[in-house]
Image (spheres, rainbow, N blue to C red):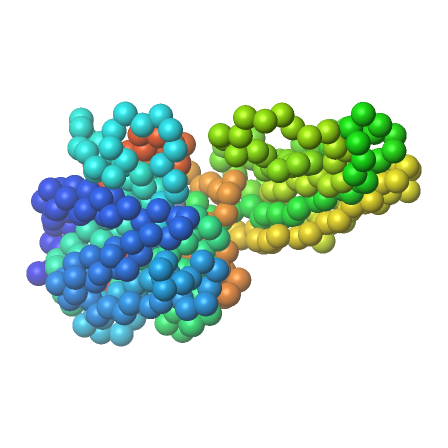
Length: 429
Ligand SMILES: [Zn+2]
């Protein structure tokens, strides 16, 4: 088979696998890999193991022992599959997370049914990101079948826990050397960023818990105690008056979508003060107490132009200000987690190659974007030290984590064609 024939044959060969792509996606959705708690990771790895071995991949199942959430009941299993070409060359790695978030309310379809209706496959994880995983498998299998003499290697990984930080998944594999630039040179993460967009990276995140303190007393004589909830009210007022306007005024050169995320943002995830919430079946009245503790969890997302030390000290300065100006104010600030921003250079080979294939297949220039939230690129960048990494996949970003999540079959086929085209370019078949 000549090179020209092979490349012309690729789109047709992908489209011939339409039924296989549909049933593969449905099979993946029907394995309920809910995280938390981290269910069925072994099951989905075994499924992928059988499938990829049949296509000539050498596979490894790797348990991330001792990582957050890993236990004998909920072991964190990952799979790495590798196909060697006929000659030496670069390795292209497709990384997909296998976990899905909770189902939530509002579904009209079976969240683990994988129903196909009007060209869409429904289910939790259809869009984020089992559709992307299926598309990358079809792309790799088709490429290997049509270009047996290619140079280099192709890897496909299915990894745990992306939805809870990726520590039992990509972070663990990166620590074990699986993303060493000597082993892997190009990474595509088929997260749902829309089939015509190349995602270069993501903003950073800083999560912390703030606690204000008070003194318990009888609720009829609050002046004998000190109300921790009112102290927290003062914290929130400082945030409203100073922090939120300051964050909104900051903008970034990162092409973040949606555009609202091109400023710094902060969510207050939770607030709790005073007595614990009563059980649902408790019918008594609350006791009368002045709360001596109030806690909030904040989720601060920051830009490539900011650094985490400033993010931290900005919040700390507001709290210290209250401490010196507000009577009896005291607080504790506990950092929960930090993720630094990651941005791949627009001229990196994987960016340019995939962008060219998008234009070829879809007939319009690729859009370059960055993600408001983080994904596993952070670990590939920081731990793996591998910079030539993008997210590119078929799902529609806005459907992720929503009820009646779906992935379009034609979108998967287009993406698979783009991925296979990129393999063809990089692996010099
Ligand atoms: Zn995802």
